[in-house]
Image 1 (cartoon, rainbow, N blue to C red):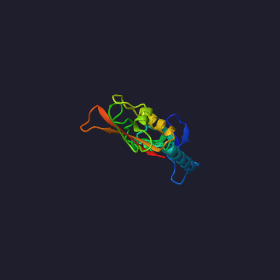
Image 2: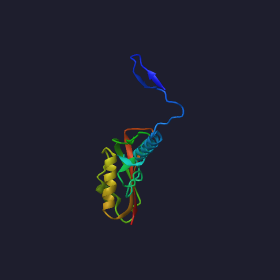
Image 3: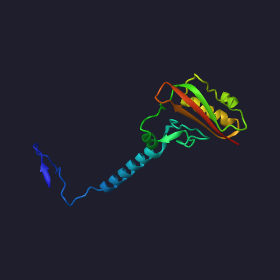
Image 4: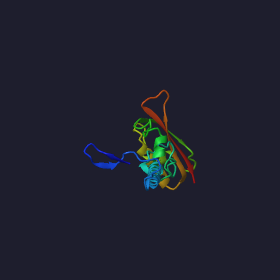
Length: 164
């Protein structure tokens, strides 16, 4: 069926007849669908974001990124966008230690660089754990930052270790 324009030119009708198929349309649709699913899967499940280090406890490796340093879009979505700890930047008012049997808690805490009156940050918390683990005396090191109730601008830092 051919349609005639108002200028007298003939061209195929804009509507296709019911029995006709466009060659390759199913292939194009399937390839597009596979590409869309592949790119979406890679973007969602590949570790492309930097780990925010939301872990309260830091052992030999972060429980959130498993020591990889990167997280997936799915993991980032699960955090609810809260990439900063609520205690970040607060002042250390108290220091507690647990698990020290053979080594001196005061000497070890001095190695961490954390002091009363100093602001606690995620980077300082991680660095303190790494410094104590590097000493080779501990199987695991955990630093908990405990906020006061009711909330204030001060926190308590608890250093918990398991000695070798």
